[in-house]
Amino acid sequence: MIIRKIIGYFILQLGGVLPHYSFGYTWKLPKAIRQAGAKMYLKSCGKNLDIGKKAHISSSLSIGNNSGIGDYSYLQGDIVIGDHVMMAPEVAIIATNHNYQRLDIPMGAQGSTEKQIVIGNDVWLGYRCIICAGVHIGSGSIIAAGAVVTKDVPEYSIVGGIPARVIKSRKGNIEEN
Image 1 (tube, helix red, strand yellow):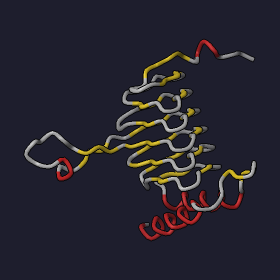
Image 2 (cartoon, helix red, strand yellow):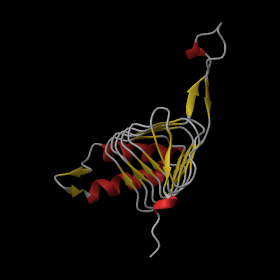
Image 3 (cartoon, helix red, strand yellow):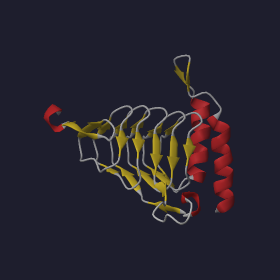
Image 4 (cartoon, one colour):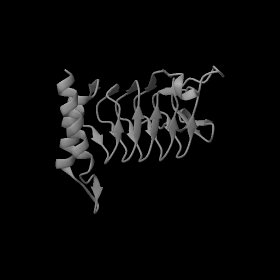
C-alpha cells in the first residue's frame, strides 16, 4: 500500500509540471497522468478529476466524481470533497493547526491538531479562498474569491469576506424548468 502511494505521489509530481490550461486548450495527457497518480495516492478518488498544475495534495484527501483542484492549490490534512466541486487556482484547504495553549513551550514544539474539513457536492471555491480546519461547507454553496472560511457554511449559501460570512442564499435564485 505504501509503495503504491509513493508511486502515485511521484506520478502526481511529474504530472504537476505539465501544462494544464494553456493556449486556450485543456491538455488531455497531463490530466490523465495527474488522475492516474491521484488514484494511487489519495485515500479515495472519484472519476473524471481535473487536478491543476503544481497542486499540493495530502494523501488523506477523499474526492468525488467530476471535481477539480485548481492550479497551485494547497490541500493539507483530512479533507473530504464531494462530487461536482469547482476549485479556482491557489485555494488553501488546511485541516491542521499548530497547538499554542502552553506558554512554557514554544508553539513549534507543541505539536498539531487535525480537524476534518468536509465540502459538499456542487460547491464553487473562488480564487485564493482559504478553508480552515473543522469547517463543513454545505452542498450548492459558493465561496467568494479571497474569503477566509472559519465557520460552517449552510447549504446553498454565498459567502465572502474575512472572516467569511453569508452574503445571501442561492435558494431564492433557483429557477424551476
